[in-house]
Image (cartoon, rainbow over all chains, first blue to last red; front, side, top):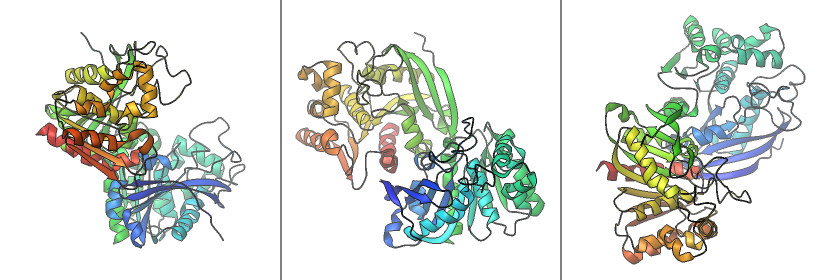
Length: 283
Length: 283
């Protein structure tokens, strides 16, 4: 299978390169864009580990690369960072009928949809876990060491992708994740539409439920701001903490006083996450 | 005179605070917004120095704060950063008749306009050099030590504000500045409209011309990407270099290979600029 990548842009950043690409996705049946940060070490024939970053509602591949300030330390640590988009895109792809920002385009929730009309395109889990890494590993100087992290809906995505696929990732972290989508408004809306009303089918896409039965105990670093407007209604880190405690899953939950849900929060702690990933991926 | 600041937002960032304010500007005859980054030291009754950052064409107070990644080191160095908007704003303020992005709103060029209809509002020099610092110094725990920097049109602004006002700033730097607006398309368009067709009046707003007659020799740190699309037509660092050489003005011009005009470039070198300013301002 030939996988064609079209380079859209190329910008030097901290001695490395921020590049954006367009390609046809077979998982999603549409054209997709993603961004990759290649640290300076990528020009030295090294096989570098990759951190996949999953963004939150309404985001594209650009938000993290522009606002998180991750490149400085990634350049030092020799980490490649890949930022996919947050949903399938294009005129052929159905979006939310009411044009809401918490479902449909920009809100793929990193699941494989089973319900019409979503199932033809909304298969972000397969895209993020399989198709995109295959593309990255075929086209860039990277190893098969993979870390995954993300923010909010993307924090949920990181947890679920890692917990569903033991052995696939060597490091895991999240910022302000939706930890228990079965029990919050954003999650209930998305899962009921993408997967149908039968809640038993949602368990495979809920970090709390997955953690209870995980066969792998990959340590989780989780940062959450305590002035985050979505903390109590949507994010519920205490649910993940309880689930982790029940089964002895290693979770470092840091409630950061004064911080909100924004990229100002992410930027403040991204270095800790990069070090967490680098330690596992280079180790 | 009572100067009322309305706080718009407040977000924790690297242990300090990113805050945005709205106020009535007497220089500009309109409501204006600006952003301030207060490092953690601001809560310890310290009188901190202030770095004023002037943004480029089309920007607002938000671009630098979101994309430059300056807060991490500013928090360490104890620097306050203030980012004003790039022009007067509002329905009452005339913009470019052709809705161009290089003149009018988002493109104040940091001059005091003398021509109708611009002269009633487009007085960004007075706003940046006098009104805004007075407001900052009356409302925040800052000293009267001031640095100034900026990007592109804002790099021009930083150079011109400092060179026109000896003694007012203790440190100066620029990214990709328009060094010689009298001799480039962006500058000629803006200066001819804001100041009229008589080119002799433009000299007071041109860094190369001002440098020749400056009474103060404040050292300049200047970074410029060599893959910047605007380098040859609009920015012309070699003109400033020649002007500096002719009079012995201390200029450190660094042509950075591979870098473009974007915030990825700024982020890559902002730490060097923050250290340049902190050394002068804390010294």
